[in-house]
Image (cartoon, rainbow, N blue to C red):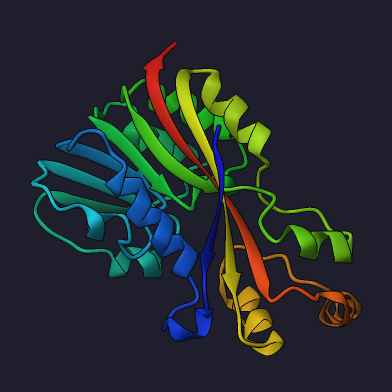
Amino acid sequence: MQVKNQFSKYANEYKTHNIIQQIVAKSLVRELKSKPKRILELGCGSGQVFSNIFWEIEFYKAIDASSSMCELHPKAKNIEVKCLNFDSEEFFNEIKNDSYDMVLSSSALQWSSDLSKIIESLSKITKEINTVLFTSNTFKTIQKITNTKSPILDEDSIKNSFSKYFDCEFETILYKLEFDNKKDLFDYIKKSGVSGEKSLSYSDSKKLYKEYDLNYLEFEVIFVKTISKL
């Protein structure tokens, strides 16, 4: 495993609050060793992964739990967009008879309530998964100050879930996103979508604003490449 520090300066220069998600989606596609023709994507959002695919595809199934995101995803004859929660039985029934060259997922599977179940199901319909997930070390200093637990999966849980069904390569990367001022930094936390639905109490927010003395936010992601099925 390789751990790298990467700095993306001045988030206020970007017209978006999901710049890290964009960076990792681009990296995920760039690092692919092949150009799969049949692809399943979990947590497709508005098409951040798809927008980086430059080769011709036969079929692309894009899954997302958010109907508003599904509406924004690119459409075509060979693209099927389904609004489904990837933890639901409806999703498992949707894919059980499918077959794909590759499954992709970016900044999504860390929210799963049963990641092992998803990977087991995917192992029956594909030989290759390439994915990137945020880990619980995202916003680590914030958790420490407020004495809160991350709502997303930790690195070991993610590795264990994949390693039950595949030989894998893992790479963990720490991104540090820098800000000009505290207001912009805290505004980013609210709008980034990484902290989920969990919001801090007024007293915790006040404590955090007072004690958080870094000029950057921490985002830890893990890239997972399956090598072969077990």
